[in-house]
Image (cartoon, rainbow over all chains, first blue to last red; front, side, top):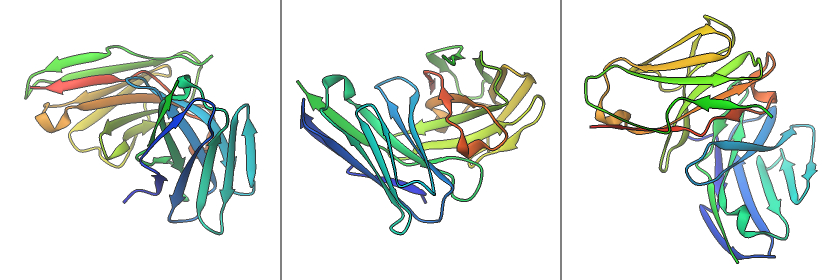
Length: 110
Length: 115
């Protein structure tokens, strides 16, 4: 079974709105990473958050981590059409390999 | 910027053929990975390598092998291609000795069809 599972599976918003995606996982982790994948392309790393961190920012991206709830969220503020992509969380499940979720497909309409 | 280059974007092969997928990274990273990506299943790790000539099985190694003769190059081999190996294959690399605390850098993928 997947270690990290994203929610929702798909999200459609208008440009300028905020987009929030969630990731839940089952076992304790050392790190959690978020990636973006544009259609037909490889994954691009967005943010890594360690288990002792609660929040991290990068430009319009904000990631939170709640280890007590075993969940993380990715917030994209002021979305743009170019943010249209699939977003994946990846956790390490107490091993040194990353395990990816199945992703959230985000569509941002102009 | 790190560049991970996969030799083909699209590849069509026949059942039973031996298939080679090549991946090259230009940042002197120790670690390299092969994943396959299928709808509804996300990315699944096939093999990874943490050093030249070293390899470790991932979650779904059956039907695959790998080769890492040089640090920058990691090859995935389908010994005898089957239709259930039709998929998107993604190569990635990362730095450091502990895989999960470093970002992975991905190539653009090879979409492989086995007929």
